[in-house]
Image (cartoon, rainbow, N blue to C red; front, side, top):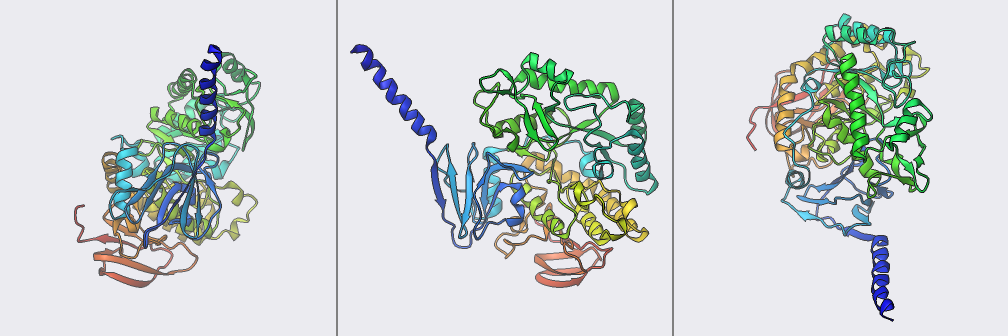
Length: 536
């Protein structure tokens, strides 16, 4: 009987714990008059601020090819934060949340979108004081993906770099993309494609480039590295088997480093440092850390409490050891010196229209150091089998112009291959405009590393309650320049000026508030310098 008295409370506790773990908190957050919300997923930028109706989005199972943050911010100065992932859905313009961890409640931080963001940032992802390498901000970047795809090779890489110089484009970061290595988990160049990788890197350095290599957390099955890492216990396992799990991702089926294991993470970083020492590599494009790779309930991690989002975050932390880094998927890590890039977009005007709202979403979620995809689109299928003569050159030029006054700009499809001389000249001009603005952009990056402010700012963030809440085709670069690119085919657009005195790119002084209709020929990017700028 005494034993039963002891066991019974324990039994009730276990039952209660199981119920608590299974409990789902459903919360509806009603909007205040005129209040609009942003947040959750960078990949949803185009539908922010949220309105109407949507499906249910789960931060724990999908990241829409980009970064997730358990944060919502509103134009009325409220924010929502949870340390763990939640699901959300928009129903008739209202936010509805589901969480297995807590009841989601809004926090009142002020009266404006900026108030909400700054309060959330200071509390949950304060700036680290560090930036990625300054070259990311001051010069254009180049990536070999669209030109070479899975045929990364020394000859074509050097030809790409030579063409950058031949066509007088500024020299900056140069990324060698996927399939340079023998197999996944191996960090040796394919000898049949790279007869002298050290000589290649040395030549690129002599030309002024800094070199990054594409890497992922995956390991090809039954490779020497697979067997070594399996023996050490450094791979994600299948529950109940003590054997490595084989995970499906876009390049097939592979094992994966278990980076929740500190020893495995240290081993991985050691391989990268060895690669740097042997070849002079400057840094890495760390790809394929998507949350969806880790949602299989049969996966077992070294960190027994780790979930899908934690594994994505462990991958992000690897980049903190390397000032030259780039990510496309992420969980939290706002304010850290990590380069983020918008997910690969196709070659279309619809994709061009996504660049600004997605960049605005990235800034409002704490990712100031973000690059807006690749110029013209990073989705290689859009360029496969396409007749070069039928490519819409106007689209490439307008995409280039949007990039020029963003924190970073990245070329992949070679403009000298697909553009005529006139349009190539225009793109070259805007690559040099980015270079000329580099000092200012770098200053914004350094300021963001200290105060957490976005570099690319929503118009509502900079000019609250002046009618910009739904604006998706204009943005502020810091607090000095308003940029109003062309995002549709054609040469006309309406531009809304906020209060103040402005000077446009043609030298004309204008007074806001005002709405102006402008003819914008293909060689022009409308941007406006604020002449009456006041310190915040």
